[in-house]
Length: 319
Image (cartoon, rainbow, N blue to C red; front, side, top):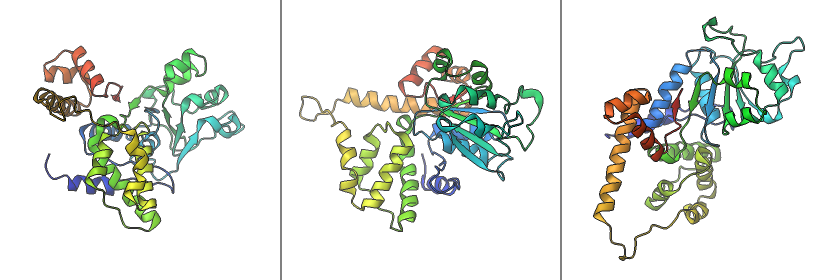
């Protein structure tokens, strides 16, 4: 894979300047997040609303801010609003127009938005993609959700017309689990961030802790990884900071043969790793066009979908 230090420096230098306490987007070094960055760059060139779907803590707000910082609106404000706390009067000028003017507005957890607020926001959305660029004084909307919005539509909690208008461009972010090659770079970024905040040295990580970071499943995604980095810097004691995490990682099962390793199992694991890397490289090259990727890999489209599900990337990409 070559020298990874330049990639690490790039990941740190391209972390977005965010408001105090706001998340920052950090470029990944693995093929999955490299593909995400290509899509983000394309989305930044237009004004169409974007729906970002991902698990909680996977970086929806940071991605929205990344899109904003790379767009023609970068000199204007970026605002993140929590849908569960919004009221119609927050969105209206009193003249039948939306009060969200200029810049980019990120709506966090779209499924929590009231029906009245959805009606107000419909006025802020372009009616057709061919109507030309939106005026600079109109806010561009980027919405995020960790829930299945089609379920919300069927339940009557989300207006169908609003959902289809906002989801014309959908970006699905992968969770941290299938892209563990990015963990060292993300952890380095977070450790440096909190070392600056607490005015302390960046703590070195033992080989045991580095392996622990790889073995853990990270259900809280980037947010949970950042919390771990904060604890490492704040406590200044790796053993104490990682104690809780260590109890959540299952002990390796060496079978009944006293720790013997099966050559057949090792070969299978190596084969899966090589297969995953090849699939992701081809998908990156085809910008996640699954049908083209299946042709290049000389497998059926259905087989590719099955393999993507196996490696935890079935929902990743743009549609």
